[in-house]
Length: 245
Ligand SMILES: [Ca+2]
Ligand SMILES: [Ca+2]
Image (tube, rainbow, N blue to C red; front, side, top):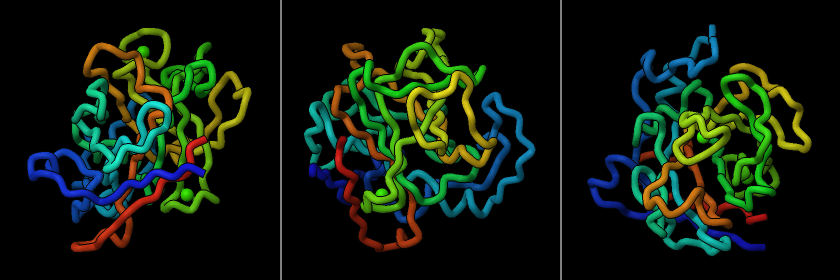
């Protein structure tokens, strides 16, 4: 069983302004605004508690394993910062503004992992605009790994993307919207979800940096970690990711 560790690590003040894998003492959230919520093409009549927005959020986004699943120690912050090979970085739809990933106010305390695999074994996925399944697969799988390292609650989930560059499927720079429905194959031709309860994290973008790759190296694992109730001031924290497949 391969395990990789994501330790709390110190960052420069400049880095801490945009990102983590770290012990920032407060959630990356701010008072609710219409701009933060948006609707991203889906209609909504849902009321979202500003308290939920304020207390929860994405704490860090780390590359915890690289090519071949080799652990990266310490994990590398990849928010608006090139990954360990200098090929790509992660952003929200507004650069380093991670609070936008809590776009429905439902992010809670789960963590997620993006695990990059050969495209022919990646995920079936949906077009956000039409809810129809794309004909190809994307080169990654998304797992909701729950609030801690206990693997018993880990589950692979489904996703949709906005094809922002019109390439006909996922590519660097497209917005990704996981939804909390268990993954299976074959998925139905039309996405099935409960709006908007199933959408806990979104507006995720993997972006090209070097121009040398079409997607992160096979075996790469990127951990999206949320703020936990025990992440108070001076709280120490470490995270153990779930085993790679
Ligand atoms: Ca877990
Ligand atoms: Ca695309």
